[in-house]
Structure formats: C-alpha cells, structure tokens
Length: 278
Image (cartoon, rainbow, N blue to C red; front, side, top):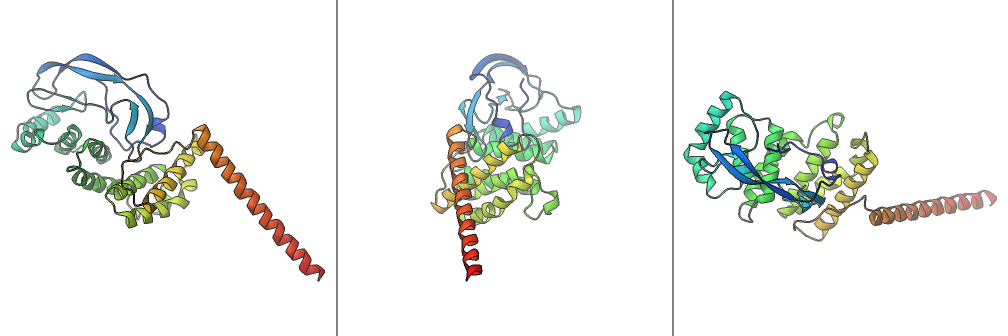
C-alpha cells in the first residue's frame, strides 16, 4: 500500500514533477485493526498539473490521495504497520460510539485525524491530515474543518516565532493560514498576514532551487492580495510563476521597473548638475 505523505509539505517541491497518468489497480488488503481480508480498487498514480492556493493538487489525480477503508469496522488505512500498543488503542477507538457515528457523516481524512489522536501521532502529521480533510469538506463541514486545521497549523508556525527561527516551512504554513482566512471571508486578517509575509520571502526561501521557489511564493502572495482586494473567497488555482509566459511577463515588469529607476536616477543627476552650474 502506498504510504501517504501527511506532514506539512512544501508548496512547490511536492508538485514540481508530474507523475504518470492516473491509474487504478485492485489490491488485496489485511486490515491492521481486526484482521479483515478484503480487496479494494486503489489509485496507483496520478498527474498533477498544478495546485490550488490551499495546496490541493489538480489534474489527472485525486487530491487528497484516496485512502482505503476496511469494510467491516470502517478503519481508514493511513499507515501500513502499527505497534501492538497502537493496534490496541485504535481497535478500542474504532469500536467506540464516536467513531461509529462519524463514519456516517465525516470524510476519510477527518476520520484519520481522529485515529491519529488516538495514538498520539506527531503533531505535524496531524496538521497535514487536517489540511487534506478541508479539501474533502462539504460547504457545511468546511468552517469546522478549517478551524481544526488552522489551530493545528498555528501550533506549527506561530505568528510570533522569532525571525531567526523562521524558514521556508514556516512561510508555507503561514500562507495556508492566510488562505483559510480569505476563504472564510476574513479579509482584513488575510490582508495583514500576506502583507507581512511579502517582504520576508527572499530571506526565508534559500537553498537548492531557491529562485524558482521564491518566484512562486511571491506570485502567490501577490495573487492572494489581489483576490482579497476583490473580496473574492473562492477556491482558486494558484498562478504558475514558473510558466514561460508568466516568467516573460515578470521579466518585462522587472525591466520596466529597472528602466524607470534608471531614468529617475538620470533625471536626479541632471538636476544636481544643473544646480551646480547655477
């Protein structure tokens, strides 16, 4: 079974290289909790053409990655193996009334978030799962799912983290928080967040392929601020800042800005020279 990537992933690197076209296969499983044997149609691969501003991939792919659910007890298989203590904790939880009730109405990734709580999984993995649950949420579920995901993300990237401890991961996490604020029409909070993040990109995005990543971060922040000014809270595909057309436009804008700056400097120099002649 394919292990899902459930931590706080990076916006650019996760989606940079497309996989093969979306494929499915029939796979035999043994449920880790209860031992039930069954077969299920399982996605084997997919192709991402880009992503939405909340991180969800789009293309010939299902996003989030579909999870297999044991038919009998409804356990969602989010990992291949568990310790004996984890199996006991999970078995007790899936047999409980709360899980039985949630199976009827909640999404698979929301169920996984509760299963992870039952075994005290790492906090960053729980946050990643809650993010993916928001991608599955109905309009009625969305505010509740976002509230839970945002609380988990805020623990991973607190607003008041000292500047010396901020990095690209913190920036990405903050941008997801801002996206959820925009989606819930909290435009003032979203505007303040993205305005504050905008000048930090260059310092936080470092290392291999940093220019490409920084370009994407800058473009998405600018896109968010434009959507906020328009009062737009819709689910929106992120601009591809590294597409040739976008890069050409960005280069032209930079050249225009540089030319304007040079012209202003020349005008200042001419004015200064004229002043000296007088």
